[in-house]
Image (cartoon, rainbow, N blue to C red; front, side, top):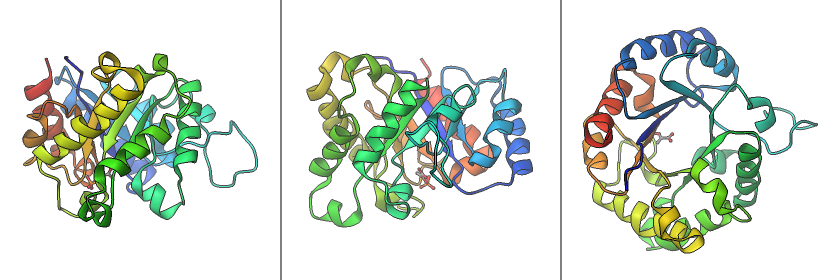
Length: 257
Ligand code: PEP
């Protein structure tokens, strides 16, 4: 099954408004000739609309780092999926930093995914176990539970618009990455298998699942050579034009069709 690889850069709380726009413009010139890979950048909410403007007509799409499920209301500090409609094309939901620092729950993740889909955004749903869970042999049951909870009440017709990212928490921003083989085992053996049990194998084979966790230019090929890994969700290395460009190029060479 040929799935278009997708590389998304999660800028987290980095780059000022001016830096974000300048970076996006520079990235666009460097990536102009890379085809066969979906490229996404996820700036802060502050810079999102300006970056989206700067990237209009380029091959790079824009994603938000989160979105609230209510369309509007008394939710200080939040931005809704409804407000992102027409500005962003993607939205990261359930990132482990949001789960850890902002009390994100599986139930909220599920509501956010539904809202994102309702407003034409493609959710990039992040799942992954902690170091303790990993060491206790709980990866499969925990990650599969996160996938099931995220998709509660979501029908098969929506699945083409959802992307998953397997991000073991112990590998995010730590420099410790899961081996390609282990990442592929969880992505294929747990996440895609869970999707198959929910929606059938034919649909599961079409859903894109990224790996995330200390992905760098020098380990990207290891992931992209794995059959079940369809791209990467990238933090640190997405903040440097050269690194992000290399990640996209490796994906294009190995999986760009
Ligand atoms: C992330 O934030 O999703 C991430 C994977 O970060 P890093 O690449 O820095 O580990």
